[in-house]
Amino acid sequence: MAIIEISVSRRGKGVQVRTRMVRNDDDSELVRNTAKRIHMSLGDLFTV
Image (cartoon, rainbow, N blue to C red; front, top):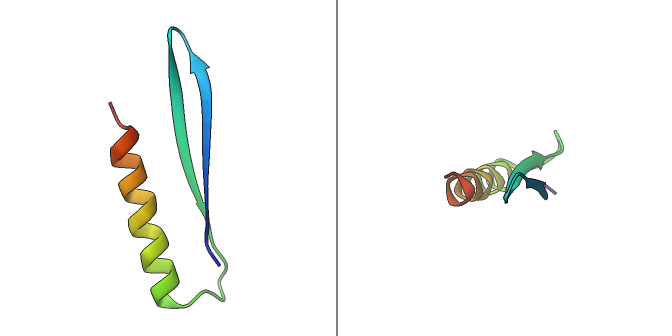
């Protein structure tokens, strides 16, 4: 199982959003690829 962590903190007058992906070496290729795609999409979503 891959886990995607999202943390939000104050930064000046706005917020800072960080994402991090944690995965097991036992994960299947499908799980790894899907989690990686979601993680990348979240990064694009929160990039200003």
